[in-house]
Image (spheres, rainbow, N blue to C red):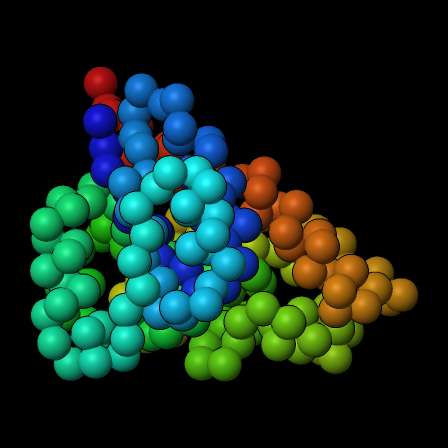
Length: 190
């Protein structure tokens, strides 16, 4: 049974979707959710879903090995960033090579980088008059939104769409594709 750890910063809809998807799986289970936000709604979701959840601060994440030691003890096969807003530290990436993935609400390399998350991305897509956008699932490296792309899915952007309309379309793509892509990544090879 593969072990998944999720990092989230906010509402946790992607985390909840993944937890539910793998709840009765023979291949994997979400063993833990970690958050940098002690008030994140993802903590309430985890409590309702009976999944271990912890919050941590910047010092524990970047300046000490506290979070790294939690991960080492958890022995994850895959670490998923699902709406996690902090840059992932190199010392953790080095400890788990090719085991950290992220979902980004745009078609990378467009609209990636520091500060490009959530509504900021959707507003930039509208401002640039893009005709399509989508999601990108990618490996995490030492730079924001720069790791090798695993999967992308697209949706149309209409001239009448607001940032909220785009956010809704992106959310649908995330709910549909993210668990399936994760399952393909962790499924045992025969």
